Image (cartoon, rainbow, N blue to C red; front, side):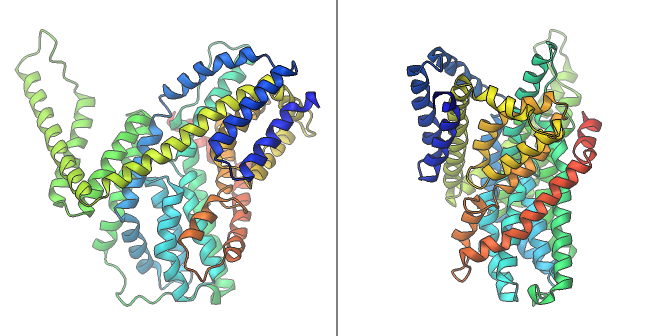
Amino acid sequence: MVEYMDLMMVAVLMAAILLGFPVSFAIGGTAIIFAYAGWATGVMDIGLLGALSQRIFGVFTNDVLVAIPLFVAMGVILERSRIAEDLLDTMGRLFGQLRGGLGISVILVGALLAASTGIVGATVIAMGLIALPTMLRTGYNPRLASGVVCTAGTLGQIIPPSTLLIILSDVMSSAYQQAQYEQGKFSVETISVGQIFAGALVPGLSLVTIYILYVLARGWLRPQDMPPAPTPEGRPGLRTVSSAVIPPVLLIVAVLGAILGGVATPTEAASVGAVGAILMAGARQGVDKRIILAGAGGFLVLAVAAGLTPVRLQRSDAGLAEWTVAVTYGALALIGVVALAMALYRLFWRDLLASALTTTMTVTAMIFGTILMASVFSLVFVGLGGGARVEAILEAMPGGPTGALIFSMALIFVLGFFLDFVEITVILLPLVAPVLILMGHDPVWLAILIAINLQTSFLTPPFGFSLFYLRGAAPPEITTGQIYAGVAPFILLQLVGITLIWALPSLATWLPGMVF
């Protein structure tokens, strides 16, 4: 029994999570219990726990992970400001007369919200409250409507920016460096968040295309499942569509463009996104749009100009021209700060700011708590010999590197039925990713395959988070069984997406190779 203590550790963790223990406590508690059990039986050197302080310090000082609370704040503020409602209403009226048009509008809005918020729960709940009742009143099949809403909401995990891709980039970068060290390379390369974002962009849009093609095909084959929606207000005009779509698109371009263009780090781009979300929410809550546009323009001009013509007044040769530029920069910053302050003031008095910050702190604490406890778990698991066991299993797989990758993807898919993406990412991937990279798999391509697989975990019963989110937001006539049945075709479409990226690796590697 002693030699199988690492496997027993995993089994106990699964049991603790299934019994309903809080995930972070289940992970940390299991690790501590088995650390002392391993020490008592002579299997593990308890001195390994001395590395815990360094691991915890490394998590809190990780520049990549600092972007997580900023992106979460950006998404929560946009969700609270009811921008999703405007998008859904406008898109529903735009595509409503098309058979399957409401389904297409939900998917497109899910993609836009994914790229501007990156929060699955907020997107699924918003569309469950707004779009699902409309789809049911129009005569949509309840299973199909539930499946479309659930699946569109999960796009926030694969379309950048998303917390999954940020955590995944950190884990894959560490795995890539570890693999290079084991190959005897000491001048190692790393993988940046920007590379993972660039790699996920085309596959994410490919998934959107696959979903839309499925809805169109089903509307043609089974028209009774998705009749056209009546639009008593008529089709929206260009101005209405522009006012609903352009603000989130501009925010997406600002955030992703800054990262992919090398203008800003992910943390800096996340700050841009958070400020942009506050300004958009302020405009939505009644702040004069001219003030918001002036503030956003001031920040934009300041960022571009300061990058092209930096000013250093501490230099002894700073003259009138430098001081003039500095005063201009100060005026631009002041205009932006005034607009930001007015937006924050309005959000504060509308009771939106406090709730948004509370949700941001809750989500961030959950993510970082899981990452910290997973560091403890992985350290103990490796100390019990689990790392060597995983490496031996992968190397013994028939089919070589391909067989090892198929086994790993299947394992991630099965674990997705029971575990959240954070646990899978920070517990399992550090064990399997270095071995797979050593076998010759491209790390960026591998990361995107895993990301789509982890996205599927939000849809797989019985513990898919999207299913729970929709269950809480759906009308009472929607049963849990209908939600489970509705996502089944989309789980198969996820597998189609994985197969597509597997067969055409350039979909994931072309853009990172070109940009970076």
